[in-house]
Length: 96
Length: 176
Image: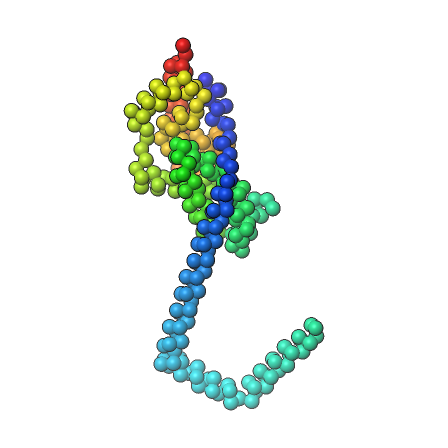
């Protein structure tokens, strides 16, 4: 009986045919994945909006505005930007 | 693509197509395991299998490859089953149910391992299934079922004894 029982127990579990099960699972996963992506994007947008809404009224915001003004008026920054744009145009031309 | 590649792609790049391959590869065995755990309740077994795959997708980066992937999957499924059993208060068969099965099916019960399995406690059923039908070593089975090795061994021993008694009892009844 013991050997017989061991043999019976060792039989592999019956394989259940798929019948659309995998497709249903993957569909659920896709829906959950999309929901998660939307939530993450929503949280990120809300965070950025909150920062942008508060930043102009803080010392840091004022410092950034001053720095931007100074950079805009600087010849060397303008020359650097021009060099960047020219290099990009050249790289595109070479690629073509 | 083999199993390890599918696991790697699912974990590293959240590749849904790769994970779909894993679902197709393992759904039959996982549903078979849960069907045994739920004592033949195929709707519940399928729900649990689906939830287990969803949880596996969320946690796949936590799989470290230090054991069979199916064992990791089955450990998720087993803990889901235990949670559901607690929630639904799924109890072992009542005496009356047991008598009914014995008298109605005594003639056919000789080879009916599944029916006998249904009379075991869930950890005994799971331990016997992991060690015999799934072919895992005691260590792998203990890890899969999150129980100490000694506990697993005693579940296997007790489960076998109960099965033997049940099957022998049914055989005697079936004899003319």
